[in-house]
Every structure is written in C-alpha cells, then in structure tokens.
Length: 361
Image 1: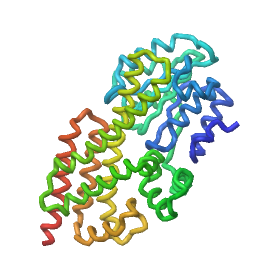
Image 2: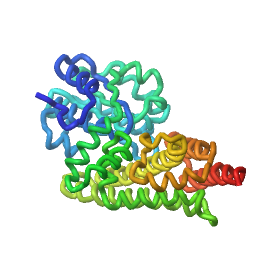
Image 3: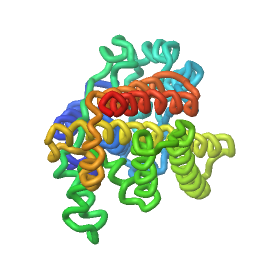
Image 4: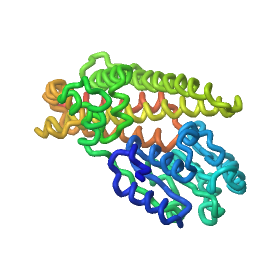
C-alpha cells in the first residue's frame, strides 16, 4: 500500500517513512525542507498510517493525535511541557499515540531543551514527528535524537503537472511561467492560481519596480503593499479555519486557538513569500542583464525585466536582493516589527538601486 501517494516526488523521504512503518524501531522523526514541498502532507499521512483513521487524522480530532503548532511567533516551553504531560498518557484507541510538532524550528531554546528528554526515552507507544522548514535554528541535540527525513524543492516538471491538473484551462505558456514563479513549491503555485493571490503578486511587482521607477518613491507605501497582502491572506485563512472548526466538537478555547494559529501562520507565510518574490525580482534583473533569460523566476514578466535591466544597475540589484534576503532572515528568526523592518529594507534597496543609477548618470 502506498501511504504517501498524495505527496509528489520526494522518493528519499517516502522510502525512509515507508521503512519506518514496515520495520518500526525509530520513535522520533524530523521532516525538514523548504515550505510547500509536502512535509506536512507526509507527516499527516504518516500519522494516518500509524493510527488507521484518515478522516479523524485529517480533521485533527483523533484522540491519539497530539498536534503542537506555534501560537504566535514561537513554540514556548509551556507548550512543550503540556506535550510532555500528555506523553505519559497511554493510547485511547490505537496502539500508538502520535505527536506532530509543526514549525519545529520555531521552538525557543527552553522549549527545545524541554523536549529532549522525551526524544531520548519516549514511551514505547509514542511516536514524535517534528516538521521544520530549516534545521539551522534547531540545536544539534535535537537533530541527533531524530531520524532525519529530508524533503527537496519539487522539480519544475512536477509543479507544471500539478498546475495543469488544477487549472486545465491555462495555456502551456501560462503553466510554464507559473511553475517557474513557484520555485518548486506547491503552496506558492496554489497562491498564484488563486485570483486574489495573483493580484497580490502583481501588486508586489509594482512595489518592487517603484523603488527605481517612481520619482516620488515612499518606502512606507512599498512596505504597506507587503503588509496588506499578509493581512489579506491571514483573513482568508481565518475565515476558512472558522468554517472548519464550526463542524467540529471543540471547546471554545481550542477552536479560538486554531483560528488564531491559522490566521497568524498565514500572515507570516505570506509575508515571507512576498519577500522571496521581491528578492527574486531583483535577482532576475541581474540574470537578464547577464543574458541568462532562461533562468529568470518571473518568466511571465520578461518584457518588464528587459526594460528595467536596461537601466544598468550594476551591482545595485545584487545589493537590493541581499537587503531583502537579510530582512527575510531577520523576520524569520526574530520577533521584529514587520512595518519598521520592511521600511528599512526598502530604504536600503532604494539606496542600492538609485545610487547605482546616479553613478551612471
């Protein structure tokens, strides 16, 4: 039986998880890799295989499934203490209890330390599955106590096939451009297929270009574009989660936490995705200027990129891309004020790009 048919590609990850199901042994797993490549889908499929109830696992209502997600910017020690208390409870229905820790890279140091004991000596019935988008923030002691299950960015072919199946009305050229812009991530492809998501991407590109095309450029206005996109995406996620929890028999506090978690998570993901798209735009300027158009991410905006690259930014576009990347890292790792961080980023990008133009004027 193929337990992970819903996960595209990822042959190594599937092999490791299938072996774990067949042979047993390991009780702590760490699924790691970029967002939007199937880690969460695989984690829930793994839990389904262990618990034997697809419907309730998918709805997150199985009594032997324990789900831990960040509520806010990080997973704190109190959250892990609650999990550790639950680990002492024997299964209610199944032979196992499965503990899914999503966004595990957002555990603070105290929370990670608190989890170590259960990773070292979990009860025989407990299976702990951590899901992380990067390994850097996790301490080596966590990594050494888990079976690492790596996930890679999907091939452009896999993303094209997924988009073509989801949107059969799109032309081959549109599918190819969307797949390139998705950068190997289905979550991004899903957003680009959504009309609202596509509109947010268009607004992001306008903001990216305004840095060097708008004679009255205002960093606060450009930052507001990314913040508005995050707010809109958060509102969509909130509405969707509210609809979902209405059909579940949940305590009011738990239902509220799920809604808040979905909203904040979507806001964060949209903001980080927006920054990745912004960085890609400035790097595309460098790529086009170098004559390597086949490698651009924003393939559907090639004419705009050609016109903009002709302005000859020199190293300015590289500097702007690095400024965006540094802001991405800071927002990912630290609890910063997004509005101030984004304004500072756009000021840096303006200096890099406008300065390069001034030197060549």
